[in-house]
Length: 266
Image (cartoon, rainbow, N blue to C red; front, side, top):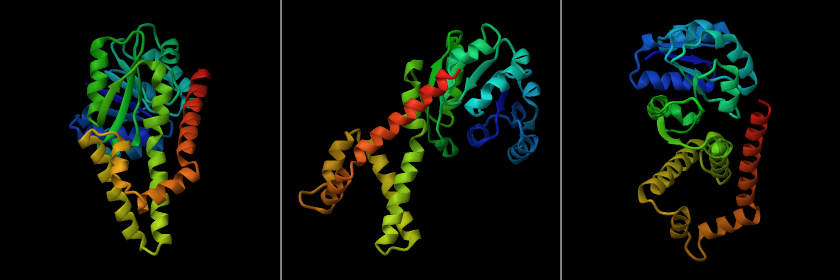
């Protein structure tokens, strides 16, 4: 199975590294980017082939489109006449619909829209897939299998992809933002930065593991920590006073709205 990755930015190179770690033959992976120097750099780093977009798609069984939404139209126009009839095209660009790709690719090409996230770098991605009109069950299974090598995978109707983008696609940024704030609080309270970082990161990891392993609702787990009149209750009261919960809801609505705007610009 030959995989062509078009786009050597953060997500493109992250997926490439993950596919190599998962055991895909380096000889069967080709990388391309609009910046030749970047293409060569990433190819040499991971021991895969470097090529132009057109060269990359010729003979490729799976074509991963990992460019910015605003660059998608030009890229597809560049390679559309060279993509194999049997190929599966995966797009990880936020807001780019399967309809857009199907309209710009040859009739009948199998398309799957994917929203992964950057924890693919450590094989802990959350990826959501939505199939296009021409996507066969076999191609969908191939997409699910490929993304499963970098984390967890769910398949949804495309109508939900803007929400997925807001929750898990952009989600790591929210978590990193909170972690930054907690570390800064530790420093403010007199802890060395390295100590504050270790405390926060392990606390985050432990809390996430508890949610996954216990299967309990986060509200139940939060209440177990929040003794009446205790420190956690005082902290949570301050968060509520500053409307942090409402701010998160507003932020994710903004992310979903932006994803929808990108889709509308198809």
